[in-house]
Length: 92
Image (cartoon, rainbow, N blue to C red; front, side):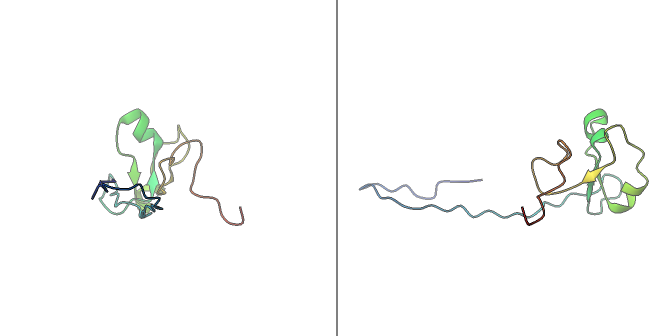
């Protein structure tokens, strides 16, 4: 979230503004046991209106396969879309 700290009143200045962001995956608990989730079940999300977040243990025995197997949970707004499984491996 960006917020205005101070507004400059005076002559126009040309400044370079850099936004510093962190790329840290928020804590996402498994919907079964509350341990850290590493997988996302799209069938749970789309058909059952559940969070679909699974830890490694519960992913192994998860029965849903209509949308394919659960996908790895990565820090991206595209997770679960079109087979996206995270950024490309170098070299690009």
